[in-house]
Length: 191
Length: 81
Image (cartoon, each protein chain N blue to C red):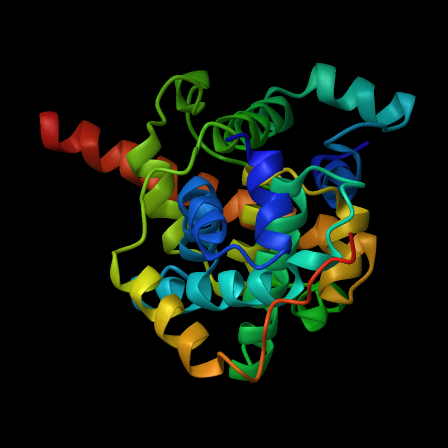
């Protein structure tokens, strides 16, 4: 049975086909929830909620986009709704309006060997993303990991495109600092 | 153009765009060009963070239970054939 057939049957109420769709998409939905929350229990609850919403809304899927894209967007909205209820700052407008100390020009002291290229691995980057402040982490995950454009993020988050770009930049800068720190610690450990 | 001026606009030009002056600064300043290289590298590497984990089996168990509870109240909206 193809995914298209499973979708059509799930839309008619076929429970087994719905379970098949769960099997096909659970990993991506869960990974998204986990990266956005950095909390396993929360991510599992949100994954559950996303699929419950899928169950309720699947009949409204018209095939205008790929099913995975549609489900992904639904999942992002579930996570964002949850974060809003928690009162977590998704995007802090204040940070973009008031200059911070860290906004001074970066004059990293060091040789050209200090560049990151070739020194990142997946584990280090995952750890660094986990330790980002929530607002930065959400924007970074949505844009750089999941591939949403700034205009889409702005619409989802209720912020301006400029704000989305600014927050993404700060997220990347923070990650850069964390990864350089990790690189330095690793080098020091070898001596 | 100073590094401060360049880095102030960097969030808005890093993924495309930028004036000739900004491009010239980037080409002539190794500090800013290293910074941009690092940020672009992070962005590119992020695309490789593929989904790696499945949720625990309790997630599906929870879904089944909720659907049973909701059973009569919230049937999936059936698509009219």
